Amino acid sequence: MMFSNIYKKGWKVLSLMGLSLFVTTAAYSQYSSQTAYHPNSVKRVFLDEHFSGKDFMILSEEGDFVIEGKVSKAKFWPESGTKTGFADFSEVTQEGSYQVVVGDELLAKVDIDNGQYKKLGKSLLKSFYFARASFELKEAYAGEYARLAGHPDDEVIIHSSAADKNRKEGMIISSPGGWYDAGDYNKYMVNSGISTYTLFHLYDLYEYYFRDIYLNIPESGNGISDLLDETLYNFRWMLSMQDPNDGGVYHKLTSKRFSGMMMPHEDDLKRYVVMKTTSATLDFAATAAKAYRILKDLDGGEMPDAPSVLQQAENAWEWAMKNPEVLYVQPDDIKTGQYKDKELGDEWFWAAAELFAATGEEKYRDFLKKSTVKFSLPQWGRVSTLGLFSLSMQDGMNTPESTVNVERPLLDMADRFLNIYKKSAYKVPLARFPWGSNGELSNIGILFIHAYLLSENTEYLEAADACVGYLMGANPLGQCFVTGFGDKSPVNIHDRRSHADEIAEPIPGLLVGGPTMQARKDCGPENYPGTYPALSYLDEECSYSTNEVAINWNAPAVFLVLALDAIYSKAKQ
Image (tube, rainbow, N blue to C red; front, side, top):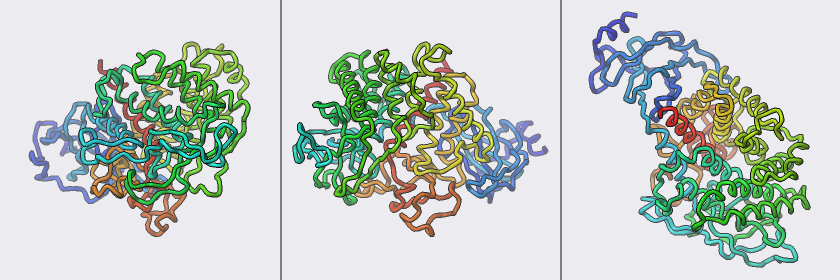
């Protein structure tokens, strides 16, 4: 390769300004992460099929030759209807700015930065602070996104569906705090369960790493990890959603209908707790048992009392045992999100797993032994695998004599997604694009990380890292899906706060739902850029199907990015 030989001899063709004397800017599309790669990351630039099989070079910002390689043979991806190949420069690990050149064309400029994953992960995590209900966001912590407190939730009404002999219809209770669930201002127990657990579990795995993660929230500097402080803000609300008289847990705290597109403090709709359900109660039991295991090893202070938290978890289990199939039924006068679930075997397994991990009691062990639940990728309505995640950390749980076969189902599931990843033209382990596809991808990344921790097979780590690249722009849309990052990030998100605050840029660190074809009527099918699933995304406020935000999508994204950074940081030591 003549051009390569020139570079190998030390010649420079690019000027310091990145303008080429011989190299022209490519007229073809290229897709890569729009933020810096971690030095340990898998690094790929996806290229138009025009470049299939061609030689490429990586040059320094100053134009020095670094490495050369060959663009992979272009493959067709049925999810996008396009063909792509990629230039892989993962072997470049030195921090700095680089240029990707094929022939005489400059295709991309990329950066490698050891601190980028931490920066991204912290922003994803701080988005939960911006989602606090019943809380004033002061300028010292929120900057231009400062706002008044909304929804004090100290006068919440018992809805008729939640009424019983102890708490009658119309009775007033207090249930302040927590996070707004998504683009609306309601709070849902089922979705809070998996979101809160995910952040607790991240802390549980990498407590050492989070000692130095500073978010600039009001609790910063109190001797407790900022990750834990923020997660406890929502968990305290969850504790208030349990009826102390019987242990049952309300399904949601909500207004009867969605509010208008206004700031939190402007919403004066009455708020209600709606019926107790088995799914909400078991999700609560699981999350509280997980919280107990963390809290029992920490000094009390203003944190929830660990023994009391465990007691609440056990009370929830007992209520569920007496009410094993109370499914959510939307009352006629309630029009907000439902989080309905018809299959509860996964909730039972998760709760039993967490309570067994917390107590070691035989009744939970016996329940796990008898369970015939199937394991699938976690999402709010499929939570059995969360139990496997927690059990995989327990001593003796990965042996033939263990209570549950933890390792095999996790690795088998990870291998299925790893196979999809390997075959995918865009190196993404998605075979479908459901509602919240970006959250689904983030949870696949979490699965890969657990598979890596169990097996030490770095293929899983590579695949997890590739999920970050996709979310940050290495996708056929060339779209970064996190607000405040990249050259092409979401601006017109479906979120009441970002609509009403009169600030041009949305709250940073929010992961939007991502491409799906499940609800294209929200903006009209004709307004979406394509008929292929991977292209069915619209950066418009009307697109609640693809451009809304939600805590159950941000939480796994936080886990994915910061767990990778923790693993990479430890490997560097």
